[in-house]
Length: 238
Image (cartoon, rainbow, N blue to C red):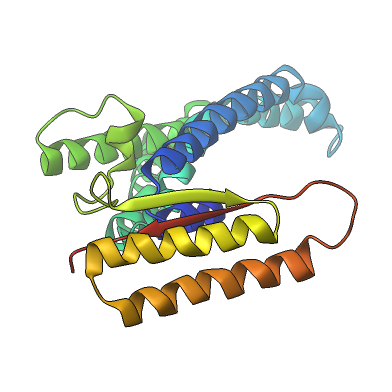
């Protein structure tokens, strides 16, 4: 999530960010839920791999079943933390990390341990921590935006300035050098219309040409399959 989000946020591609975030949430939650179910189902045989003591096996298998309950929620939080870093919400990502592990895990674990000891219900503390962390994320987004987060876009929590205005972005694809030459002219026109500076337009269009030609010369030369590159240009008034 972190790598792809870094690429798409750099391009200010809201649609690609949405797909990345949603896919990471769905795949992460589903795969972790399945893995948690398998671990819970085979908790006793897993515990027996490490000890033959019946009492220890019983305690360990119960602990495993409780601990894995937090895995699906933890995957959702992990996606949020990784996504918030490249979009510039570093303080929020750090807050989540610190509170999740240093507060919402430590405090419930200490309270349960003092009340019941380190047995049974004690191992619910990871689930309590992940649930509390998700509630905190929802509360902060709600407080910052003024509406309860319900959709993927709400949880992405992109800055208001994210993305170019309609008509101020250009997307194209190239498979060969002829495509690149056409793109060079389109890029020049795009810059001239919005900036009216021939020097800047010429330099940017030349940059696009050189970059794309180098990619074709050095990256498309394996002869094994068709290749395609995607180029995105953005214009901001600032």
